[in-house]
Image (cartoon, rainbow, N blue to C red; front, side):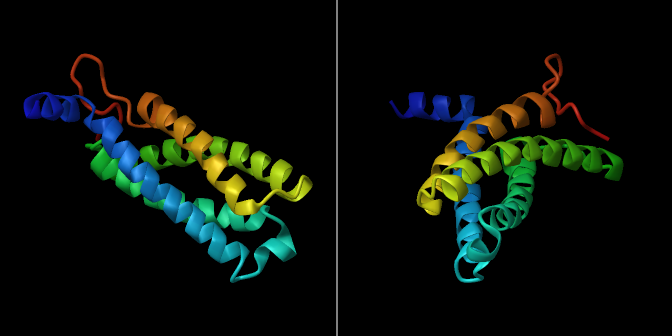
Amino acid sequence: MIDKIKELCIRYKSFLMYAIFGVLTTLVNILSYWIFAHPMGMLDSFGSKLPNALAWIVSCTFAYLTNRKWVFESEAKALDAILREVVYFFACRLATLALETLIMHVFVDELEFNDLIIKVCANVVVIIANYVFSKLVIFKKDRKTGDNRIKE
């Protein structure tokens, strides 16, 4: 039984690590949103857009660093390769930021639902989309060699 669990963990390591760091990224996103929106008072002054965008910057930076190192184990070392990786990562995350911003605008700003509940729900949708982008675009492995697509 232990061997079977170990085998599954090895087989699905990337997904399991993504799930762990996805939860942590979501916590960073929600906590930083809450800080910007409530203690800093931005929700009353700017609606959900500014605190959501600032939370995105904080959590996206956290996600890139953890995904690069522990989830997809990027091998890019040269500055130009790392910059390409960063650009791909943030560009894909901008697409999901747009989706999250739309969800927040409709449900929080227009329909006046609880902002934290909607933030959590929006994050579920975003996590799924971000995994797909990360796996298929940003940290894509070469089918033949198993190496990261973006290297030196």
